[in-house]
Amino acid sequence: MAYSRDNVLPRPEPEEALATELPGLSPALTFLFAFACGAMVGNIYYAQALIGLISNDLDLHGGMAGFIVTVTQLGYGAGLLFLVSLADLVENRRLVLLTLAGTALGLAGAALSGSATAFLLSSFTIGFFACGAQVLVPFASHLVPAASRGRTIGNVMAGLLTGIMLARPLANLVASEFGWRAIFFISAAAMLAVMLLLRAALPQRMPQGGMRYGAILASMWHLLVTTPALQRRAFYQGIMFASFNLFWTGIPLLLTDQFGYSQRQIALFALAGAAGALAAPVAGRLADRGYTRQGTAVAMMTLAIWFVIAGWAGTAISITALVLAAVFIDSAVQTNQILSQRIIFSLDDQARGRLNAVYMTIVFLLGSAGSALAAATYFYGGWWTTALAGAAMGVAVLLVFATERRSRT
Image (tube, rainbow, N blue to C red; front, side, top):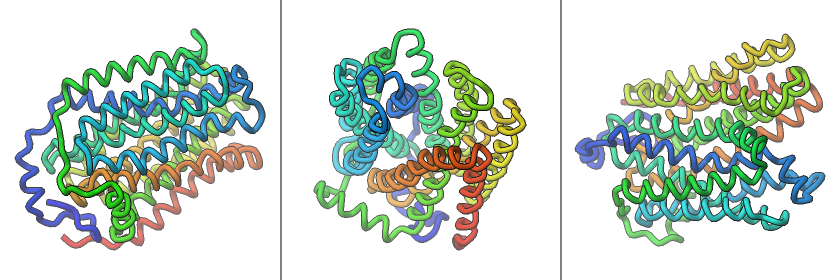
C-alpha cells in the first residue's frame, strides 16, 4: 500500500507489497537509530542555551550575539536542502557516517574556537551535518514493512525529540560545572562513538533510479508543487513547530521574571517538559491503525487548549500547570510530526529522502518564526500575549485542516 499524492489514504502499489516481506528492525537497532537521531539533532540547540557565556568569552556582544543561534540554524537549513536529498542518490549508510564525522569536526572546532569568526564557522558546520538525523529517519522506514512503519518512525522520532528537549538543560548543567566548551567536547566524542556503532550495525542501502544531483534538487520543487499531501502536512507541522519554539523561547523569560528561577531551575523545568516525547511511539501506533485524521485533529485542539492554560498558569504562578502545559504542548507537536511523516514516507518509496528534505525545510523555516514571535509578544504584551499567540496558531491550523477533503478509500 502507498499513499497517493492527492489523498492521505493508501492505494495498492506493488512496491508496498514487497515491503511487507521486510523483517523490520530489532529492538537494539531501533534504539540505536533513536539514540543517534537524538544525539545528532541535540547539537543544534547547545549554543542556544549558552549564548550569554559564549558571546562574553568570544567578545561577541550586542545584537551580534544572536548570530550564535542564527548561523547554526542556517547551516541546518542548508543541510536539509542539499544534504538530506542525497539519501535518494548515494548509499545511505555511507551518507550517515559522513554526517556524523562532519558533525564531530564542527563540534571540535567550536570547542577549540579562539574567536567569534571561528566559532560561527564551526556552528554552521555543526548545523549542516547535524541534519544527518533526517537521513536516519527515512532510512529506518525503508527497513520495515508498511504495516509497522508508523510505529518505527514513532520510536525513532521519540529519540530525536528527546534529544531536542534534553539539549538545553544538559548544556546548562554541563556548563555550570565545567564551562561552556565542555559540552562541545563531550558531544564530539559521542558523535565518534555513535559513528563506530552505526558503522558496525547499519545495513547498506543503495537507492535506485540513477538520478544526477542536479535532477535530484530540481525534482524536489516538482514534488512540492504536485503533492498536496506534502504541502498540507508541511504547513500543519510548520505552524505547530512555530508554536513549540514560541513556548520554549518565551518560557525562560517567564520563569526568570515571574518565578525568579535560576538557570539550573529552568534546566530542570525543561527536563520535566521532555516527557512530551513519550507521545511519539503512541502516535506511530495510531497512524498504523488508520487514525491519522483523528489524531491530527486532537493534536491541534490539544495545542490550542493547553496554550490557554499556560497563559493562566503564568499569571496564577502555578508551576504545576505550567509543567503540564509543557508536556501536553510538546506531545501535541510531536504527535502531529509522527502522523505527518508516516504520510509523506508512504508517498513514494524511491523519493523518501527528497520528500523528507522538502518537508523538514518548510517545517524548519516556518518554525523559526516562533522564536522571534515569542520575544516580540512577551516584550510588548507579556506572557498572556505570548500564550494567546500560541493558542491562535493551534486554532488557525485546525481551521485549515478542516478544509482538507476527506480522502477516498
